[in-house]
Image 1: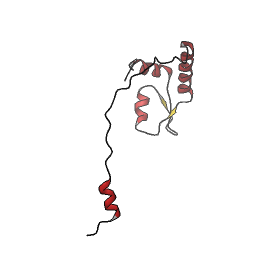
Image 2: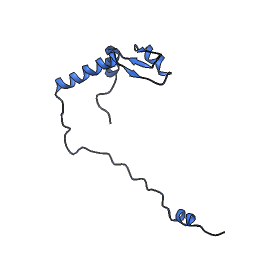
Image 3: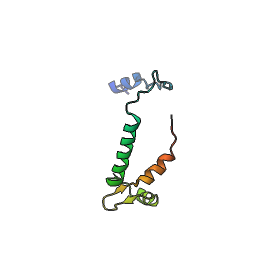
Image 4: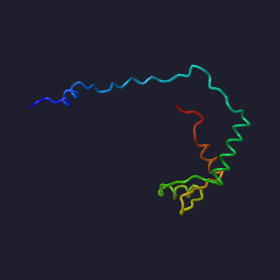
Length: 99
């Protein structure tokens, strides 16, 4: 059987080598872009958006879970509105830092 150009190229091909993982360390302290008051303003604005506009959830299996946790679900278009108390409750469950 004759060797084709494709066969020769496959024989020369080298699989990519997986590089070892190195943990990234910051060289400098993070920069504070927003003041504490500005951070609070962003947070309050986000709460208003989640409560009044909401988010669209296309996965219908999530709707009953969201409703059971206090969210208002529009089954017609999948828009879910989050009361501020619900958002604050779940934010309180998150760790302050993670890696």
